Length: 146
Image (tube, rainbow, N blue to C red; front, side, top):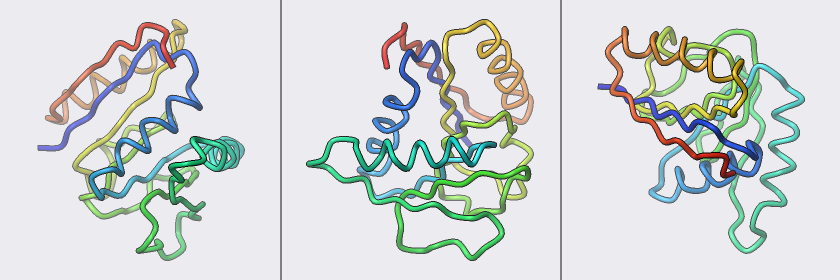
């Protein structure tokens, strides 16, 4: 059964995103960081280069629609349509997309949510959609930590 984990009330989303990516690949998994903004992808690319210099996070920007690099643990991508990916990839969703409607359902989805009422309302909609699709759902209230 696919699993989605929500991290809510995150204060510093870029820093938290870097930490979550680093943790997700420790066990050898692959992560697709999905955004609806190429600008956000570029900013995250810069943040990952600066994040903990002693523990580099191997990553690259992937253009959805092009062949997916096989050797890179972290792919950063943006687009207006959810790409088809391997089911064993973890998706860190930074977009408004609902990954329960993906062509291939990933085994694991991570959702990072800030603390604004608008962000929380949008997350509730995704939460309900994932639940309706039969996903196992987890939640961590970060209480403003980042």
